[in-house]
Image 1 (cartoon, helix red, strand yellow):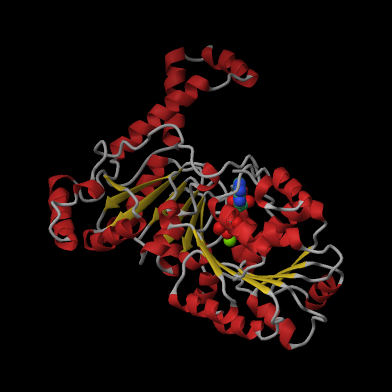
Image 2 (cartoon, rainbow, N blue to C red):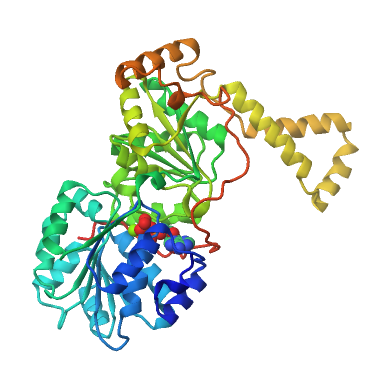
Length: 495
Ligand code: ADP
Ligand code: MG
């Protein structure tokens, strides 16, 4: 399947090529022809499946370059607003499409100015857009294409009333598209109100927990959570990770613990000031912060590439949010790992997640301190073997080897290196062995009914923590784009 025979305009195809998209994602393949035909549409697909291009490409193909504002996209947060407008700018570049991002905290007159100076696409957050509309600041504002993006998130943030209000200002003859990762009742009801005879497309949740994500759970007691996360981070050595917490307080405490132990970690949650959030996201994108400790709402929808690990400090409250969380990794065909901590009382939630997502989530034991040490040693030995010898070192060696014998020198050097990356913490963490097995079987039996202990789901693959299976699987779509622009983004909720 390629983009070429979907009916998109030439200049848009050029933008797609330059963005490095080689083939449409499933939601794009389904949605694009329907949008081009002019139907209203409800589209459901998980985060990271390419929904932006699924509506952006076809509507931009239909735009008249001379015609003023024709497309309105409403997004829940300021970050998403900028993300969407960046993406559309990139894809629409050769079609000469001008986009304006409209959100709170920015100069009103400047926004109005940019809009009236011939932008065809307006991407807006609900609060600021409504403000413009109520104050009658937008002249001849008649977008023919209106897209409600990440609708479920609007619901979560309490924007539905604003949305209904906004639609009172929009022309009756328009094409309306609603995109959402999940379809709660309230969103279906909203769709009834604002769409006309919509077509429905959805990419089912089988594809939802991506093939590229390996999923594991570890059984721990409540008080062991932070030790367990630290241990797993030590062991896994992620190059970029998000740890999800249930509360802002947990996120703050955990990030403080991680920082105290020497990890470049930062918390991201709704209590931070806009500027602080902006900085956190920026340093995470730039790789200065390697571990983002976040609450669900703060992190949802953020498009951050190359997250290698997602940790669930607490198991999420429902399967949909599990899917959302782990969808932060394993994107664009890359491999990712999702790690969930559960206490025995939470097996019920775990089972529900497995049933709904049909995911294989494998049981693992938290590595011991010894395991971490020996893994670190192996890595260190490997690094030393591959270390390039510098001129400075050669000189220093000549100097020092005349002062002491070579083996003393070596041992002194190694001691210095080893003391620098020491693993800490209790030797054993988590509930293990026969006890756990009995516990798991009993629980899954009384939760799932008669089935003989549900060994499949809980299967302890290969035993222990040996989960460093090599080689990434090839799923999803290809994208050879290597970096994203990391302009400032910040985090108020569009007010
Ligand atoms: P969603 O809105 O479903 O969460 P996005 O539209 O933000 O997903 O897309 C996620 C990422 O995938 C973006 O970085 C986007 O550039 C990239 N992407 C989208 N479509 C394709 C494609 N067909 N091929 C490669 N990468 C794509
Ligand atoms: Mg999106």
